[in-house]
Length: 208
Image 1 (tube, helix red, strand yellow):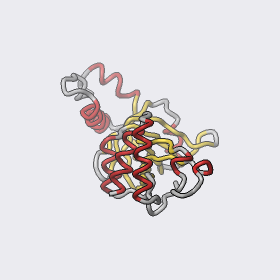
Image 2 (cartoon, rainbow, N blue to C red):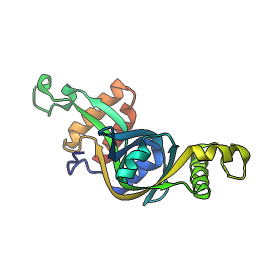
Image 3 (cartoon, one colour):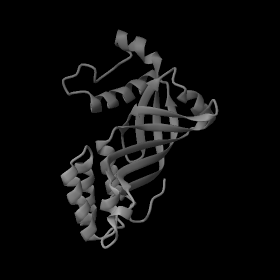
């Protein structure tokens, strides 16, 4: 993705995004039927270096990973449409303004390791369920020792993604003046469409 210097997210920013976003698109380098495989999936950003997830055994992703273990895990959030008139530079004709989009995007470039060992797979599931399930859930600790889990575990495979590098972007008017950003922030308040509030927060934070 194109990342201008004024849009590049800091390490602190993209890590904060991954702490709040746990659903994304897993994109393979290997092909199936001539195309990359794109898998919408929940995931757990486990450490600075690792992402954990699991997928159904019939998923075509496994065939793609046999060809090439390189993948991209991509997430996008906090987007808002910036109307043409808003984005027109001060002193110019607003009717000739060029619209744009504000958003946060993080792309983790990873090497995938397939996990089939029942004990390791149960550990990945336990970590994911501990993250997603309520604390009162009885399903936080799956185990091959549990009959129902023993039947279900063969139907899934785990993935451990080793993060090789990160591309991260927070596109919130970084090329605009402080005054212009304030005006756009006001427009976002007035419109109050879904996403406008979070986009405005990023806009103002990055302005200061």
